[in-house]
Image 1 (cartoon, rainbow, N blue to C red):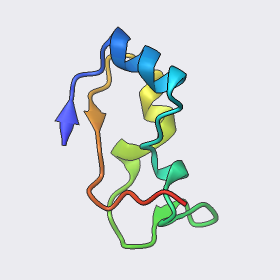
Image 2: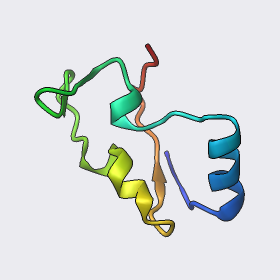
Image 3: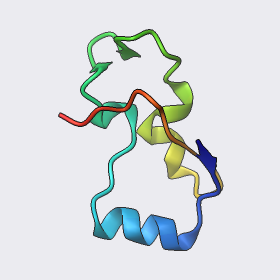
Image 4: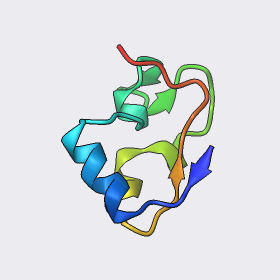
Length: 65
């Protein structure tokens, strides 16, 4: 799912501690810096969202710990 990132989302993500990055996912291998299911992770990584214009991209495989 792809959504525009706006000020309201950024504020709510901070307030509610929303998690959607690879680094927050149980399937992410931090040592190999990759998804254990083999999905591309570049567009889901936390560093991408330092840009407030970056579209939000949610992974269908995202799993919290």
